Amino acid sequence: MLKIGHYEFRSRLLLGTGKFPNFEIQKQAVDISESQILTFAVRRMNIFEASQPNFLSMLDVSQFTLLPNTAGAKTAEEAVRIARLAKASGLCDMIKVEVIGDERTLLPDPVETLRASEMLLAEGFIVLPYTSDDVLLAKRLQDLGVHAIMPGASPIGTGQGIVNPLNLSFIIEQATVPVIVDAGIGAPSDAALAMEMGADGVLLNTAVSGAKDPVKMALAMKLAIEAGRAGFEAGRIPKKRYASASSPMEGFSRV
Amino acid sequence: MKLHINGQTVDVPDMVTTVTELLVHFELQGKMLVVEHNQTILQKEEHAQTELAEGHRIEIVHFVGGG
Image (cartoon, rainbow over all chains, first blue to last red; front, side, top):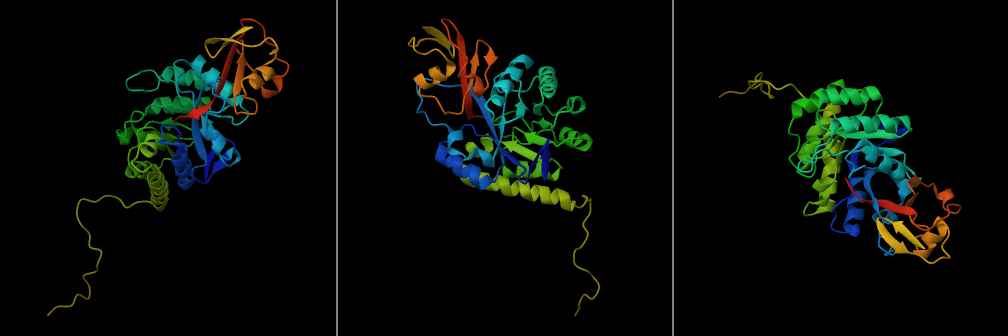
């Protein structure tokens, strides 16, 4: 079970809800992924188009834990405001702190992320900060009392996979709260690797929504994360330089 | 009465006097949304008694797809 704050989840796949080709495909992808946590962004409503469909209205929201993000925020204050707006919906008390510091790389601003996390913890939110893969930042966030650490595997939407596995392994080793690898996952093997390394979960979006067949990719990610987790729990063999035979030499039949 | 809604100046009929009535006017009642009135975020229970006047700033937000 994945425990975050007062929540418990069977699924270790957190799914984003952006950029799907249409709501029908998105619904099928969500269903097959068996994700229990879905991320959302908070945006202005088009008040002149009341009938505009909204993905949330297609879901039985009681079946999911909503994880709104603070995307768009560039300062801690902006992130806190978005988090408060999200909470006022009455649908959630979790928040993904996302304070972007650079337009091109969409890398998070560590100082603002730390400040926002501190302010939101004081207000009683379940706080999940999206961070760079910096070990000390992860420690500082943990010391504040965040409920999970979400280091990026590589920049958002790049699909480059885990570009710094060493740093990620350091973060996982020292973690006292769940580590959710967030952003940059491209292939199921990336997600599986994160889980094999001991991550507690994976948050992805574009890898599924941008796949040729998003529904099949959602299934592939679910299976990869389950396989990676099982592999981690099973404990892989150490790597050795030279071969060791699987079949015994004893009893070998000769002419 | 002119209100600033989501960054736009919008003319609403004078019969609209509360946030609840504003949502009804735009046929948004019952939708999953959050209203901020003059920079104060409202709980749903506060919609009915939050009165509107000329020049008030309203933000109406909801959840959209995002990662």
